[in-house]
Length: 293
Image (spheres, rainbow, N blue to C red):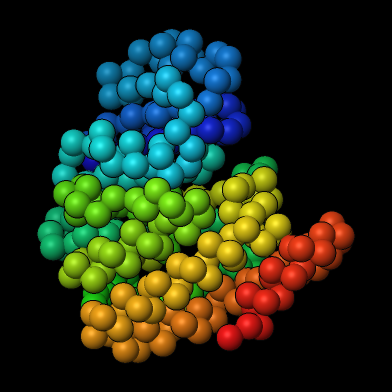
């Protein structure tokens, strides 16, 4: 069985769409657990009416926040592999079958990245500059299946994180051993992945399309990018990551962390939006991050 953990805080209709996309899987070897961090009305009743034997719903007694709810997903998972799905994303019907096939072919894998397409708030497939750059500049060329590990993988991700966190399938024992850093609010996924890589974890990526990742301007990462908060966190993270890579003997990875080129370019692209909002402090933060030492 595959543990599909779905932390929720946001649009109720998109949550229902995400849940129904799991129920529509062609491979029934899954368990879905929804951990609701909201207080929206009608959600418990909707899940009760589902009466699905493999769908479990739990409302948090107190708001845990993004990272806290992510960690709760890890703590409650019981199966060998797990997914932390975005509550506004969509699994294509072949997702579970795809990751089971990858596990069968690569039993040593710690991380599995299926093929992903990006959709907008309306559910239409889009080609954004950020995602085109991920695929053409930072991601390895994937034809069929690619296996990566060690410093090669660390350098690749530190140059530009080309993975899609809500679509990833994780080996549960490994993610439990590391966990999420409670101090991080936006870049916690990359921090966790790098820890798994330094522990010897292997990533298996396939080009078989099986997941739709929703990108829209109301997300926490998007809003914090415009205000500059994301990059204040990123600066400290990349400096610490460089030190860890050096201590691990991975000098190329350490250099990639210090440059964090894709993150700097991202900050530059946020400058027009910050200027439009007439936020002088955000413009200052973004400029220093993008062009500073």
